[in-house]
Length: 366
View 1 (tube, rainbow, N blue to C red):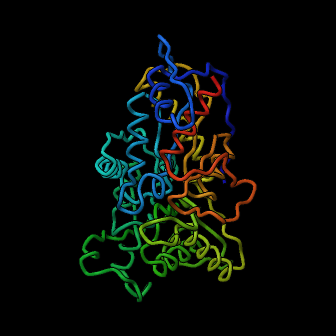
View 2 (cartoon, rainbow, N blue to C red):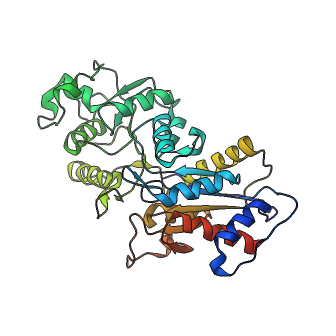
C-alpha cells in the first residue's frame, strides 16, 4: 500500500460575489440574507465527486448531479471526478458523461481508478491486463504507454485447456493477439473481471511461475510477479436496488485461492479510493486544473469529497484531510454502521444538497 502526506498553505476565505448571491438565494428557506461585494476573489476550495451513486446511477444521470456541476462550472469553482470505476479510456468515459450530465468535462478533470497506472509505464515491459469488456482495457493500457499488453483472451485463444470453462464467445476470440513466449513483468487489474474463474486461474499461474514464464511453476510456490489492483471496492451501486460486488471482492478471491494453493499471503499493491496515493494524485490534478482553467494562484485550502461509499470515498477523504460529505443516492443507506474512519462530516440526500452544504460552510468561514 502507498501512503502520502498532504501539506497546505493558509489562504483567504472568500467566495465570488455572484456565487454568494446564487447560494443564498437558493437557501432562502434557511433565512440567509443575500450578500454582495464589488470584487470577485478566487475561491480557495474545490470539489471531488464520485460518479456512480452520486452523479449517475448505472446508465441514468441523476438530476441533482447536473444542477450541482453546472452551478460550480458557471461560477468557476474547480472540481474533478474521482471514481473507482474504469474499464474504458478517459476520453471515452468523459464523452459519455458529458452527454449524460449535459456539461462539458475535460479529461484533465477525470480520474479513474486505473489512471495512476500511467506512472508504471517505465517500470514494466510485458504486462497481463485484467478486466473490462473484451480487450478494451488493453487499448487503455496502450494509450498510457505500455508496450506489450496481454490478456486472458489471448492466452485462452492460444491454449483453451488452460481454463476449459471460459466464457469467451467466438466473436470475442477474434480480438485475441498472438501469444509471445517472453516473460511477464507484472499483473495489472484495470477493471472488474468478466470471467472470475478464467482470470483467477491465469493470475495464480503467473504469480507462481518461474520468472513470469506462462506454463511454468516454481518449486517453492513463491510469488514471482507484482500484482496491482486499481481499486478495492467490495460494493458498488447500479440500477439494482442492492449494492453489487466490485473489484475488491475479486481481489479477496485471488488472495484466498493464492493462500490456499501456496500457503503464503499475497503481496499486492492496491490503489484507488480509499488509498492515499490516489488522493495525493487527485489533489495535484485539482491544483493544476485550477491554475490552467481559471488562473488561480496559491494552493487549495479545502477540498470537499462527495461520495456514496463510506468505505472508499469517505474513508479516503478523511484520511487525506479533505472534508467528506456522504450522499444517500448510492451504496450508503440510513442505518448502516460506520466505523470511525468512515464517518463523514455530514450526510445529505443528494449531491446538490452536498454542494449547498459546502457553500454555506464557506460563507461561515469567510
